[in-house]
Image (tube, one colour):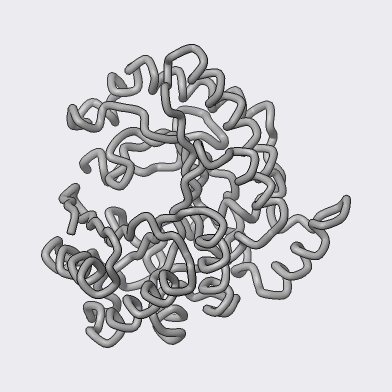
Length: 314
């Protein structure tokens, strides 16, 4: 297994924090597995389903949480984080990455020279991070540690990446967290895997409507620039159909025309084994072609990321 396929959420004896070498970050990313047990999706390509409890979060649960979040006692969609544990783990992982000691560990020794750098702290993991009742508090912690690293000169441009399926971006606590990070630190990678409702249900197997994803992408893109991340692969023996790719590009055009500031589109495929169904990686050539269509038909910057480390810009 190469370093790009090693995305194990377990690291030493940590509960929350795990470093990975990320194709899309082009360097080391310190992940925070903020929501182990809950997600709004049950993606066919997911490698983390074994860690989940119960069914995907429903539209009704999200609505109740949004209403309660405006008061003093938000409804918990997931367990709150143990902040003292998370802070200790994050400080330790940052120290390893910033000192270069991370790349001396066995699982990271084969990291290519160009990737031997800390790019970001990523709010990601085995569930949807924005479901955590601790989301805003964790963002404030990241901001504090990032400011300290910048002030000491260890990390001149600290960055926090939120990797999200966009279903809970409208929750007040999520917005409070992103505001705490500020535009100079926050970067959003928001998922859009489909152009049609039917493909959305096949790929993401959600219990929230596709319209919620589209509405949240539009609203968030009007507030802050974002990246769109889109997974492509061979589903049940079939590659993406031309009509579906065309519909997906149409959604990108609609978001752009509606005022969403899209910094770029990440066209990628799975680098790890799926536990959710019959899903296989798409070849590099096909990813390259899709990224080219995004550039030509939607007028947006696009990059592609292959299963074994191949990547490029359209």
